[in-house]
Amino acid sequence: MDDPEGGMPEGDRKRRPWEQRFLFELKRTKEVSKACEAIDKSRATVYLWRRKCPEFKALWDEVVETLTDVAESTWYDRMVNGVQEDVFHGEKRIGTKTIYFPVFAMFWLKAHRKKYRFDEDGDDGVDPEEVAASLYRLLQEADASIPTEPPAAPPPEAAA
Image (cartoon, rainbow, N blue to C red; front, side):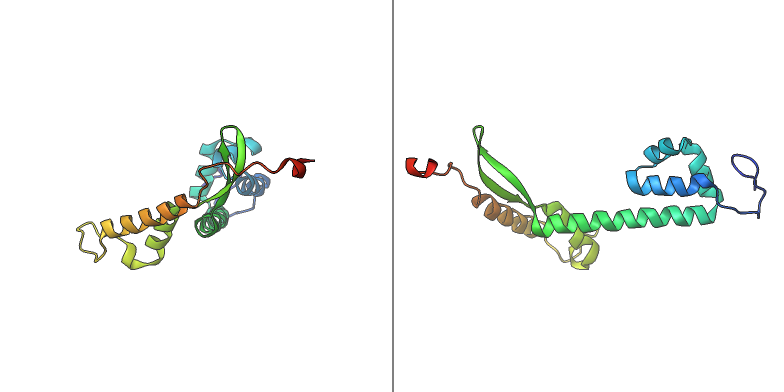
């Protein structure tokens, strides 16, 4: 197999300087296109190298696995702890509310608990309507904690 860019015969594997830069940029930008742009290589070139060089593919896969771990951790945190969001009445900020991400919970449970995976034939022992009703109740409880009226104005002496 020849070097996709010329100069490297099969069996004489030496790491090219751009490979490490590509992997660094892939980790930094999280996008192949942006990493390619940063090192001035085409996507076709890096994907050809990925196919032809098992070592490069393994390093690339390691970067993607690390990014996936970070994403999973972030999603888990948002699922469990939620994200604070400002609440406004008109243009006035009146407080905050915690936004949770039930879709993340659904995917997490499906990935880690067999009982939440739905078989195509519907014979999985889980009632989708019961699961939906449970999620709906949780959303209603979260929604009920959001204030609907602005807080009372502070007494005039407190403003001084």
